[in-house]
Length: 362
Ligand SMILES: [Zn+2]
Image (tube, rainbow, N blue to C red; front, side, top):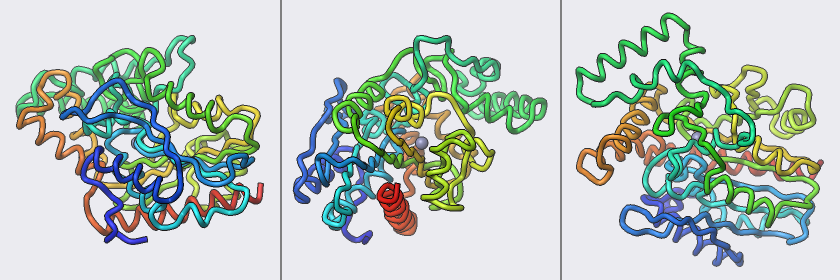
């Protein structure tokens, strides 16, 4: 583990190149799922995956980066460090490990949290044949969350409306309205989509190709932006008392925070990657955990997300203003500092070690 080896990247294209090179260097054969879109300067967008270990392994660990696009700088950095640092050679006998790099390559490359469909991938794994969950609070706040203009007067007026709602309904209802997910505003925040996105379909293609027929699959999905700076909170979403919850508790111990017990900074929501994997892997022991690294304050997170959504609704992402907004968003989800990266690497190794040990014992 070393910051000096430059496992972290400054752009999606750099991360992709390093991931593919490190995969081959380590003896792997990466496969690419090409996204039909391009990056701002014509970059190829792809989800790249690579398998290590026994091809017939009954037990597999899956490590995912970039569910929320721009958050991919974090998970990618750890993945590349693992590949370069001899991770594949240290796998326990009989284990398989699947690296999924940039499951939302559009968001990673364009510096967005959402996919090319403006969808929060972590709200998109719902049953699209059923009526979508309703979020009336979001409808009340939509125009204040993304005001027509970002000038000072407009922002102040919008903020006053938001704070009024918060006073009337309380903090929990406020955060639920804003960020629990909504299916009514396709240009809004935390939009869950009106069908499976490319990244969702690619997730299912990856599961089909690599994970069906296994006995046990553990997933660690890397995220950033919630919680104290540098701290990696392990978040589980299983219902209390289920086999999934019990497995996670025994593998990860007291550092596991369970949303269904109200323990986590994150709230239980519809459409999470967690549900996508668990449904698709019904019949095998799936153990899915989110590894969420803190950066800066929640308020700052809301400001940068709101500005980015304003930019894609009303502004020009390639303008000077667009670049300023992108730089602030990137900094919020990717503090480009050695101390933060050291914390990512340490915790990334710790959690994946626990997951592999848990798989071996299960
Ligand atoms: Zn995230």
